[in-house]
Length: 454
Image (cartoon, rainbow, N blue to C red):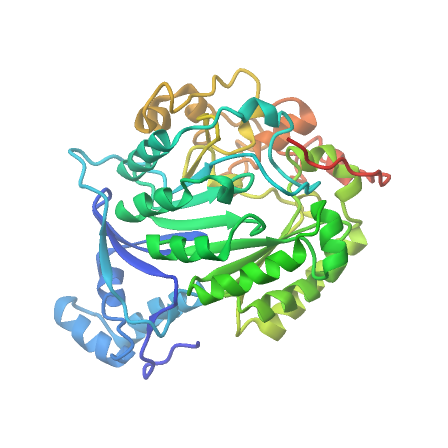
C-alpha cells in the first residue's frame, strides 16, 4: 500500500494480532508467518484501527515513549507493509495460550500436523515418504486434540493442517475449532479435491484462518496428468468456494520440468481465483519427488527462465497479490535455511504420532524418533535426542563450522545431506563450499515418473 504519515493503516485480511501468554509477548499471525513484537511495536500495531493516521499514532506514542517520532513509527509500519500484513481491517487483539509457571527460551512457533497420508491424487513430486503403508495407524481425534493443546502450551502459534489430504479426516472441523479455542492460527494445506463446499463453510465457522490450495498446472489437461486424475476443474470450484466462505487463500504450485515454463500462467490463474498469495516452489527432492528426480528436475535454462518470469510476475501483479518464489535448491550456490534450523522454530507430527524436526527426517538412521503416543511434546521438544542432535551449531564440521553464514543457513538440510552423501552431518551438497557439490550439478537423463500410491 505504501505507507506515508497520512496513511490510516489497519491489518490485512487474514492477519491476527494476539497476546501470547506463553511468551509474554504480542505477535502478528499471518499466512506462513509469525512475527513476535516488542512492547513498542505492539503499541503501534494496537493503534492500527484504519482511522488513526501515522501522525496520530506517533503523537499518542510520544506520550508513552520518549523519543518516539513520526519517522520511527513510519519506519516500523513500512517494514510491516513490506511483509504484507497491513491493510484496511481494524485491529483487534486476542489472548492466546496460558501463562506458564516458568518462562523458557527456545520455544517453537509452528507445528505441521500431517493428519493422514491418504490422498486421492498421485502427484509424482509428493514429498511424503515412500513407505506410506507404515502410516495407516493414524492418531485418533482425542490424541490430536491433546497434541494441539500441548503444542500451544510450549509456544506453537501457527498450526498447519496437512497430509496427504487432511480433508479426508472426518474430525477436521473439530481440530480446527480446538486450535482456534487455544488461540492458534490455522492453515489448511489441501488439494481441494476432497473438500465439499459445505465443509468449507463449516471450517470457516470453526475459525479456520487460511487455506493453501494446491494446483498442478495452469490448464486442465496437463494439470490432470500430473495429478493422476481429473482434478483441475474441481479445484476451480473449490477456489470459488474458499472466496465465498470469506477465507484468505494462497495458491501453491510445485514447479518441475513439466510445468515450470508456465509460471506466469499459474500466477494469472491465482489472480483469477482472487487469491491473496501465490507460492511457486521448485520441487524439493524428498520422498516420491526424490524417487522421480530424473523426471522432475528442470534444466538450468528452464530455471533461469523461471527466475526471470518470477520477476515479471512481481512487476505485473505484485500490487494485487503476494508472490512467493522458492528458488531451486540444485541451482543455487547456497543451501536453504531448512526450517530455520533443526529444532529451532518448527516441529512436525506424522499421522502415526512420530514427532520430527521436519517431515523428511524419519529417514535418518539412528534418530530414535519420539512419538506423542509415548511422551509429551514439551519433553520431546526440549529433551529428546532426536531434537537435540543437530540443534544449534556445535555439531557442525568444517566448512560449516567456520562459515560466516552458519547462523543464517544453519548448514542447510540434514535430510538432503543424508540422501546425497549418506551422512546427515555433512555440509548440504547444495552449498558451493561442499566437497560434494558436484552431486547437485549433475545432469539427469529424463525418465518416466512413478505415481505416488498408498
